[in-house]
Length: 231
Length: 231
DNA sequence: GTCGGCAGGATTGTATACGGTTGCGCATAC
DNA sequence: GTATGCGCAACCGTATACAATCCTGCCGAC
Image (cartoon, rainbow over all chains, first blue to last red; front, side):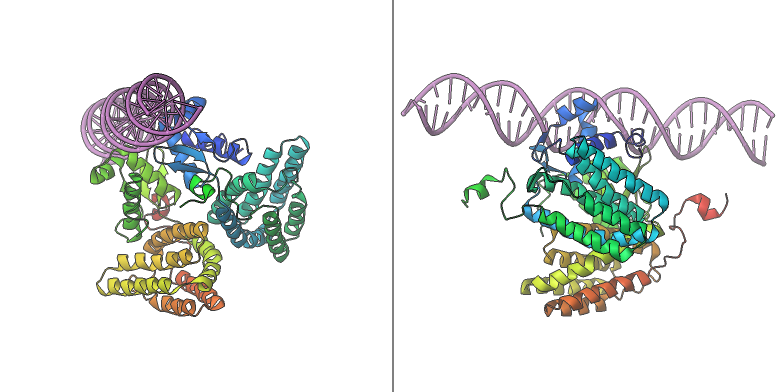
């Protein structure tokens, strides 16, 4: 409600970037998909100038990669990058959850419950992409509650990248049953149990990584040199 | 060596962004300074298109703020933002220093020593801006040694913002005597003392914050309303 | 003398044009 | 049938042009 329509009049490239980011987050745009400037511009009714600005923003968030004269593609995080992203989340999110527990308000709790409910509804409606995005928003909401804008922005970026990582490395497509962890987190937060929330978040992130297939296999459409093992 | 000259041929906006970032980091560009697109473009001999790309990159790193129809200005972090930046650093850097201690190599140590020496030389030569930048590079180098690209990028951004914060809130201009902490860190790193490095880094960051004047005074070229205390 | 409005200049937002590179496909030779 | 070289089409990089907006200074009215 606050990030969709409000910014439209402010910066015309923001809606393009947000729309693309959401599509990536919901797995409607797959890793490696090319994003030609002309095509995107035609879809949104804007010129390449504003599309470029949006793509640059996404590139800075590591959601797309920009290669000179090759255009923009949805990023394909490597296994190494996947590990790094979750290591960074492990450094940031548990302590942030603790802060959130200490200053959470009833209206915050309501919003978190609404997130979980919406996530359940999306899963029940057979929209796993939407559920995944809402699951990410749950984490972002916790960072927002912690009232740390800077860390919240880092976490937002990391969660978006996590969505790409999940698209590439998730072990079993059907198993998106992480709502239990979010329920437990909600419980700890509602009781202002900072230490508990910190531990739960730590464990939750470990669980997430354990559901990824991060053996040293390269990303699916890997670079040919590595694929053929020739120097 | 890897981020200065190599990227020049790759992306023409990168050198502009790097030059501006360095000038900000070295306090040659002060918070609040306007950066007109035409002027910057003329300096670098490029058109506004590429300048805009550079400014957007810097805006994403929070070194400049972009306001619609108002142009780009060097950012003026608020007290709140200053606190947040150092809180984020406190979450990221100590653990990163520990990782660095565990995997540091002799050549890494040489590079760190060179950084410290250069920093001393800059101070002796009466170039506090250069010394500050080198001091920041010391932290970035540690993150690089830890071999965590993602976290390294976050830290790089946070250190650049720290430079702006120091420009605004440093208590005594003359006292840039933090080289002792870096020496102690180097010692711990050279002995692969992860726990020691983590503690030293934590303390170092606390010391840094204590040298800032973060009472709830607004930023120096604050909004006129607040500056004059008139409603 | 002060306030309000208006016009001019300056600066940004967006679109488009042009040049260069890449990559693909086809035709031809072997 | 396969390989090689050429040509074309698509796309990106950059510059520039035009429109919209904002700031500033001046002028007139009260």
